[in-house]
Image (cartoon, rainbow, N blue to C red; front, top):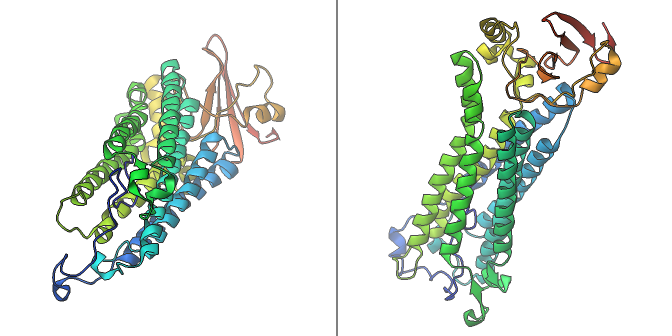
Length: 419
């Protein structure tokens, strides 16, 4: 999840003042032998489909959190904002397609300066939307980490990463708003270049490195925690797979970075003629997949209760049978920690009633050196008292009060009262 140039690619004004693209004709070869197809519709379709899939996952996330879990937190609002800014990037993509992307450069009117400036303007505000979407996706993941981790080092690492992510994105946004001084020179070729400053390309590459480092650190952070949990091998691999989804996005970011670098070299001064408006499609595809893929990965971390409610067999060994197996293996009769349910506030020791359950509702379980149940959220009161809540049915909540000496009792409590 990193960025160097406008999300949909293309040359940007340089401090030396590169002129607009050269006119078609002999410069590119004999028009009769050149291709004249267009992939504009493909670009728009890919962008809309990617955003729509991400929107479906965010909708499932909000259904899980509002109907099944009945709690919303900063992690959810951040992912919603990420989706909104991703829609803004989609609008920029469509704007670029309207003004030339996806068509061969020799099929465009070289005198249509307004279209050319509109194209560069769209790459600029698309870049802003790109940064904002990635920022809130990263914040959503980090907020979730901070809430579900009990290890102090993991929570501190999450907080430090969050500060770094915020700082780097603020820096990049400031850099984007000062990409050229005056900013209008970014898209207006008629402003005299001697009166213009634009950031050199090396400036953007340096910042790309920072973003890619934070990307990998964010997705690496939970790995040692999952590795240290006592779980059957299959369950552990499934957890690794869930948290490892983000590395797919990192790979897409790397591929996109190489594509940007290749395009940048092809439009450098002195390079042979290059059909950059048509070639921009590759980067536009990768941008759509990267942005919305990150949103999908962040949402998948919270969907276990939804899957357990409507398709419990999909969970396999992460379901109730696997939980019991893990509990028996450790001698505690309870399953492994779960992810995706909201944290529960530790209730006071004593009678279990509807008022207590209302106190328990609204918090989030934390993943760490604690026990849990196979189908719900959990909290640890202290070393001898633990509470867990069945959140998958949305109807009942189960409480275990384990007192000193090893005795335990169980009660099933309906929301709002005793069964």
